[in-house]
Image 1 (cartoon, chains in turn blue, green):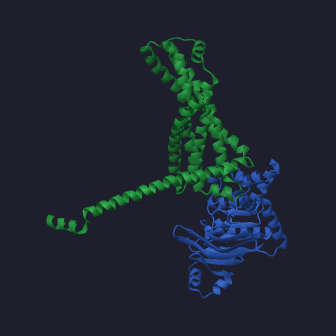
Image 2 (image 1 turned 30 degrees about the horizontal axis):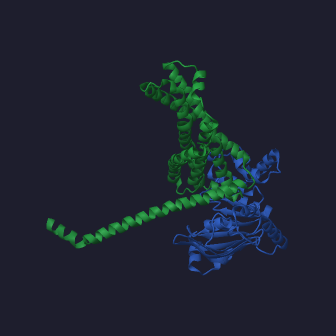
Amino acid sequence: MATANDITMKQERSEEGGSAPVVAVANLRKTFGNHIVLNGISLSVNRGETLAVLGRSGTGKSVLLRIIIGLETPDSGSVCIHGQNIVSLALDQMGIIRKKMGFLFQHAALYDSLTVAENVAFPLVHHRKDMSRSERSERVKLLLAEVGMDGNLSKMPSDISGGMQKRVGLARALALEPEILLLDEPTAGLDPISSGEIDDLILKLQRERKMASIVVTHDLHSARTIANRLALLDQGKVVIEGTFEDLQQSEIGFVEDFLKLS
Amino acid sequence: MSNSGFTTVTATSPPLPGRRAELISTAASSAAKLFESFFEWFGNLGIFSWKVLCAAVTPPYEWRELIRQLDEVGSKSFPVVVMAGSAIGVIISLEARYSLSRFGAKSMFPSTLVYSVIQVMGPIITGLVVSGRVGAGIGAELASMKVTEQIDAIEASAINPYRLLATTRIMACILMLPLLTLVSDACGLLMGWFAQTLADPLSFHQFIQDGFKGATFNSFLPQTFKTSVYGLIIGLIACFQGMRTRGGAEGVGRAATNSVVLASLFVILADVVLVKFILIVFP
């Protein structure tokens, strides 16, 4: 079993080398009971790149993200972060990897007993013990300003809209300055204007921070706006992976139908 | 009409021995499923306990959350424990006075009240009251966090949810139960004496002197500190039920109910074992 030091050393070697993809999943399989959700998925994302994972509901897009961050364990296959296979790592060892990741949940998953500011400060309180209270408060303000929520510090999550909750969730995901950003349906349930704002925000963050991002979405327009590459999933498999133009030129029936109906 | 109906039944129904076999097979399969889920529950509880134990003995320690939970379990249970303890004292006082008078043993009232409250009723009533208030609270809170993905969000933030959520709550229950029991005992004795004094005046000093005559630490300390085991049971079961919840609002309700029912049941069962254990170890 890998120790915390092994993991850190491998990450450092990988970062120095810079050639290996930041996230690489290979032959990932996951079943729930008799239902095969992922059936041999292989994908990779490099630094500064955004991959959008598209597909119908129930094709395992969110499960893929949950496996990458270690909230689900795959039946088989590997998930490598900076070259380190994280499948079956113990909880505390996985914690070291997770500090490099930010995750935006589909419904934001804000802590409902904490204020907006406390939600964003939560990872900092636990992982940045070196920060003073005032430094932390300053950092929270900066993060919330970055997502356009600087006027809502003391509000409770139940007092703000779904779009605002997503922004706060995004600020919380960015708190530890992650190298990998995982976004689960960032624009789902939002009106077109809010969706556009979230897309612009994600683009801005990517330009400034050069993270490796994986975005799970139904929204083809959003995927086209924010992603360098797109992967279309159907029945637990990647049907096609490439740029939007590659998808447009594809003659696969499912791809044509998906583009036509989206 | 009746003829045709009779014919249809006999034509489609299997013969009686076949139906009986089918019934037996269904009952056996249900019993097997029940048996399996019973052991699965204990197996999962064992795995959960191991994860909590590992989280409890390794740093970082969540002191801030522990203090918050001590307040949540201790201070906020204080009023209800005071009321329950006082009521128990009054009830025992009324019953004891009546029973002892019948047998001409009124002089034994102080020691009867002291031993009944401190050795028997105080610990178990405190355990049950706390399992109701705290068990339901922890079960519902964690279940709600689970179904809204807040526990996943904690884990995704590289924080061990067993350490932050379960260990702190269980430790708070373990530490607070004996203190709450002392409060309950004190209120029970005070109100028991007060109820007695209204009918038959007796100085408090005399009551305490007679009540604790011949008592040693062994008479009371193990009975009070056994409630730490109740605390472990209440905290562990409530956290376990909460953190394994599935299925929205219905799941949250089920987790809260199960937390209270199972914690209360296991507290009573544990008391049976602990009473015998204490009698053997502290004769």
